[in-house]
Image 1 (spheres, one colour):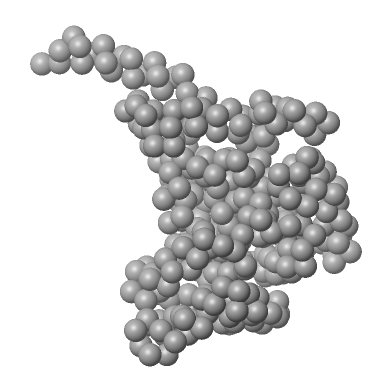
Image 2 (cartoon, rainbow, N blue to C red):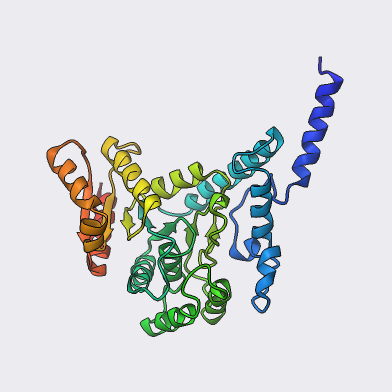
Length: 320
C-alpha cells in the first residue's frame, strides 16, 4: 500500500522536474542555436541570460554533485536521453569512421597548431570521417571548425581563422560572436560533427561549430564517450591534465581490447609529446616491452601522415 506521504513526495518530485531550466525528457542532441538561445552577437551581455548559461548557473547553485535527490534524478534523466540520442546519431553513420581529436582548451586561435588541427579535421571530414571532440574551445573548437569548413578552399579557411583571431582566447569578449560570424559567412549543410561538452566545465563555452552537441551534466559519461566512440582512432594534440587522463584511459582500452579492437593513438606535435610532456616515449617503451599491448602509436608533426595513418587503418578495418 502506498502511503499518503509517498504520494506527496512523488507529486513534489514531479513538480521539481517541471521546475528545472532543462528538459528532463529530452531525447535528442542539442544544436548550438538551442544552447545559445537568447544570445545576441551585438549584445555581449546577453550571454549571461542565454539557455546554456541559465542551465550552468542552476547546475552550480544546486551543486556539482547534486545537493538533492530530486536534482540528481533530473540530471540523470536528462543525461540518459542525450546518451540515447548519441546512439541514434551513430545508427546512421559508420562508427569505424569516427575519429576523435583531444587537446587543450587553452590553445589560442592564433596558434599555428590551431590551423593545422582545423586542416586535418577538414580533410578527414571530406573523406567521410565523423569528427568528435570534447566540444569546448581550443583544440576542440579547431576540430569542429575544420569539419564546418569541409568542402571549402584553403582561402576560405584562412579567412575564417582571421575572423576568429579577433578574439584569440575563449575568455575574450567576442569569442562567441566571431564564431557566429564565421558560421554566417560560410553556411554548412552537408557535413556534420559531434561535440561532447559538459556543464561541469561550463565556464568554457561550447563550440558552436559542432553541428550536433551532446552536452551532459556527468563528466564521466562525457569522458567515456569521447574515448570510446572514435573507433577510427584518436589524435592527441598538446594539452595538460585532462588530455593526459584521456591518453591513459585510451591506452587501457586498447591494451585490453575493451571494445573488441585497438585503434590508432596519434601524437601530433613531436617536441611537445617527447620533451614538454614526454608521454610518447613512456608509452613506446611500455609497448615495446610488452607491458602494454595492442598500442598503435604514431608520433608526427606532419598533417598528411596523420591522415594517412587513419585512412590506412580505416581501409584495413573494412577489409576484415
